Length: 241
Image (tube, rainbow, N blue to C red; front, side, top):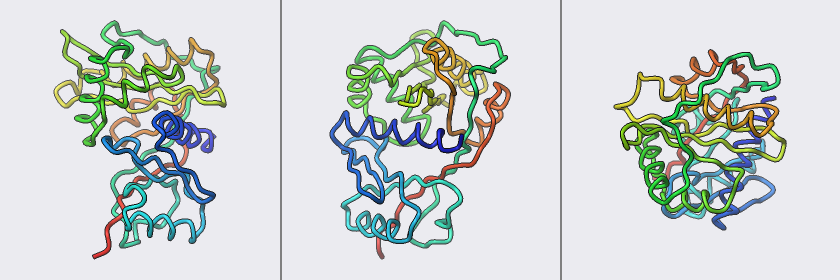
């Protein structure tokens, strides 16, 4: 199951990289190198060997690869002075065939379809997660694929939350970028967005819903029936002094 969770994330990044012509793949790792967006600008799918890590490190420090790397646990990068730990996430999954929770479709949540929706999504995601999400990239996704579906939460025309559901080639739905602005936190927006994405997955007959939970979000997902597995960590590659 853990592999299914990780594969969904990597496949999402690959699809965005293909869509924007920013994907590069070698036998040791894959990269998406974006110009105007921090998402999903990173190295990922790193093979578990010393040569792969040393190559990715060297090329990143030379400015030829992104400076952000996502790597599965367990790893020993926290003790490596060339890497700065940014955040960790828990891999989680829900079997949709055995789900028992009743889901509520909040009317304040709508699918991103227009340029304005894309701008609202990008702004909300950027403020929620603390990194740049480019609205042109979001609008490109909206117009060119049905497997990546984006949603925003609005109250009185103000966008307070966002989320993505991605249908991968293994018939699993990944829930990604579920975020809430600070002014909207504590009002159940994250839970409402998660339920809306689960409904979308059910309507499309997905097998599992998978996600990568922050420490803040993990308890919400457990209450919805998600089970924890291993984890994934994100690091910044430091330049040579």
